[in-house]
Length: 310
Image 1 (tube, rainbow, N blue to C red):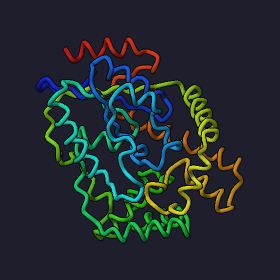
Image 2: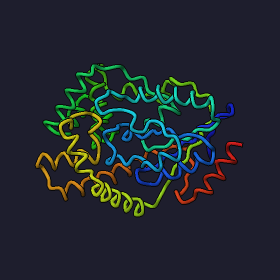
Image 3: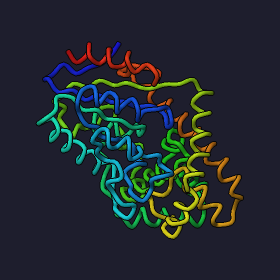
């Protein structure tokens, strides 16, 4: 059963799915069909200095449909989930002045949730806390931060992805800054900072695991051929920045630090990307509002959307 808000004549089409599943081409075709624009909710593609390692749409793809929130920020800017929610909500309202339908595409579950469910009311924390934790990550490694989280917030330690430095740091900074567990601020009914006044349709693109993992491995090889090593080298002096604590860069940084070989780094990127894809699929699987299609079923997707939007 599909959930669609029964209100107004404006519709947001969310196209989500694991990394490398094939979201870009489907989103472009859907946007072209409805003569509209695309907003990204992929947190790895916001940063203009990170192009190869985040697999942003290429020049040809970007020329077919107007995209928003693609390489629109710098790694040197402080940019939070709350910032994205505010800016994306404003952009949605702006575009709805001239379009009845908008397409949102990405793989960052929390960013989609911020637009459809609202955000949990987390407190503001000092930037210096994040900076200190990021330095500790660089000098002592992720396991040290995980052990600290286990002491401060056992519930979050059991529930969040401990191999994701950004998630661990986020939980720790709230624990330290507020003096309360990060988990204590999470609610079953988050506060909706944006009053939804449009219909929502969610589509997840899916592939069989073996097919998806094969595409991931191939993409990593292509990234290396396109110059991921050189891109990472240019970013290496700033490797402690939060935006760079992500798959595809941290492994290359370990190679540049002399900790591992380049071949091993490439294999680690593949492995960690597959793990990331598994977490994404687990996240979307819990959403009962989603309808699922294989990326090749473009005509079926368009037909489904036509019926839902009428």
